[in-house]
Length: 124
Image (cartoon, rainbow, N blue to C red; front, side, top):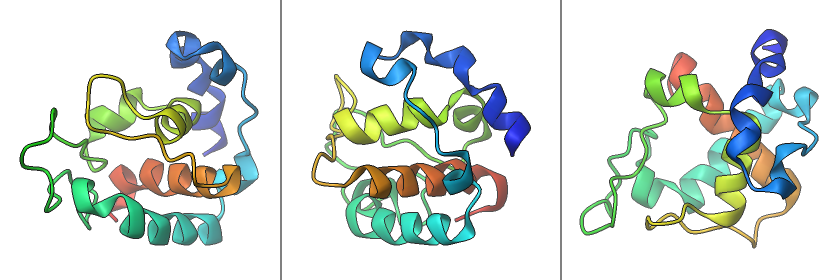
């Protein structure tokens, strides 16, 4: 996990300035407890669009401006960085139906990041 985290800054150059150098809580990203809390938050807030299995097949996927991301996709995971996922959870994704979740605390956002980054590796 630490090797993967050390390489994560490479794709962060395109992020908004506020997120480019955001400290990444490596201990949290490696925590099974944080992953489980992130899974619970995901099921409550995200599964409606992204699906309970985080495969992009949520019940509300029809009619959205873009298909929800499948976090099971190895291609998605290859380009995802902790900071990038945190930025999307925080701000939403421009040009899509993905909202920013400003009501979540920083801790909760990192827990969601922990969960979604884990999904492609071993399933939801």
